[in-house]
Amino acid sequence: MFTRRRAIALSLAAIIAPAKAEARKIPVVASFSIIGDFVRQVGGDRVSVTTIVGPDGDAHVYEPSPADGRSIAQARLIFVNGLGFEGWLERLIAATKSKGDVVTLGKGITARKDEEGEDPHAWQDVANAKVYVEAIREALIAADPEGAATYKANADSYLAKLDALDAEIQQAIAAIPKERRRVVSTHDAFEYFAARYGIEFLAPQGMSTEADVSARDVAKIIDAVKTHKVAAVFIENIADPRLAKRIASETGARMGGVLYSDALSDAKGDGATYIDMMRHNVKQLAKALAP
Ligand SMILES: [Zn+2]
Image 1: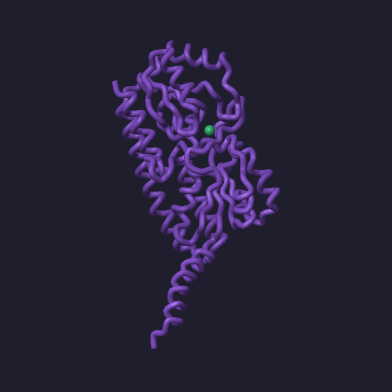
Image 2: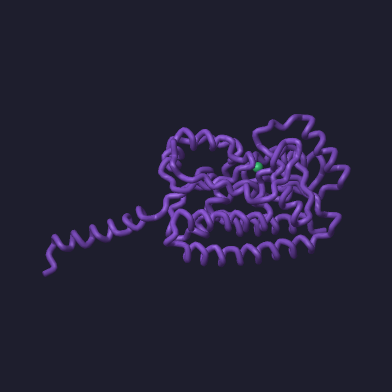
């Protein structure tokens, strides 16, 4: 007999079952949005990902909240970039006494270095993104061996998409005349992109947004833009657009729109995933650098 009590029990079960499924997921933390996307791609339904520095956020200068500390305390795995990117994170992890394993994805790549130290922006080269994804796959398999087949299948399918993306970027850049492949960004976030795909980036601010931009830095860039006939000046999604606009107006260079440097857009934007963000950037570059 279908009693009222049974109806209530059934509807309760419908509420509790998904909550239980969620509770069984492996709790993991990603330090910022781009790594968060990689972990979701590989982890799929088996993991519950909390991203600390969200869309359009600047991980160089982030100030963690108590909620971030709680997520880290509960995480089985904590995926971070390293290479000096999230300077605030080590202290936060230590403070939470987290027992989660910290997986430093930047360790797997050949880091670019200059007088400022290591360049953390490795994800701007799709070959490095693949190294990150492979390391995420291995860490998830080690933490959750039952999910090995799922993680492998998810990673394989995503790595194939990254190969296609890499080829697509190379093709798009090849169509831009060589003498036009020089642009300005706000901070020095695109050296890995430059090295792989052959576009030169100048920036008034260094590899970290922590550094102040002096009047001298700006004057130097304005000079360089004039001397080297830089085709376009870009805004970054994590940066104040005023500096880029000033450089463009003082040099007569074209304003080239927004590039995603250190973060994805929100879900409604056109850089909500890593693949979308890289596609968006290349489209902006190709548009601004067309003769
Ligand atoms: Zn940066």
